[in-house]
Length: 111
Image 1 (spheres, rainbow, N blue to C red):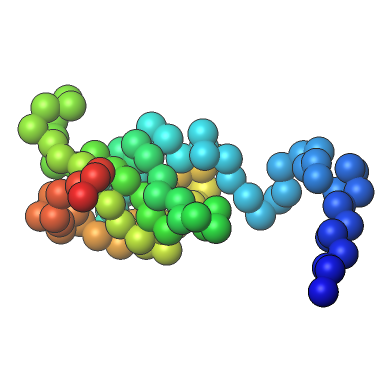
Image 2: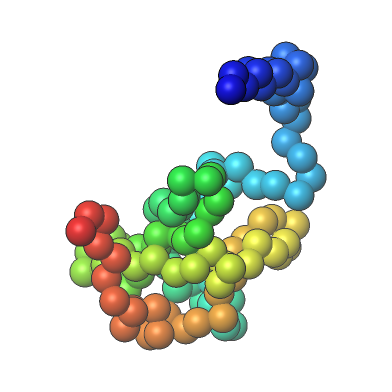
């Protein structure tokens, strides 16, 4: 039995002309500070984990160091990170302290 080839979408439906209001760009995350309770900086975002369907499942952060020395890389679930507006600027907040994140297991990039 022959199946008919699917009809390709109209060319106009493939393009997104502007960023939808409920979205953020990856560049809005990378290199940004993450704050914990009391607005204390607890880490810096350096990558996002994306599954094969395109869904962001995690955030990779540098934590526990001082001036880029002695820290480690950890990953947390994407749902644990909250984008908020503080003083007119976008910021990212987690409900975990610097100590909690520093004691998290290190993130392994490859098995």
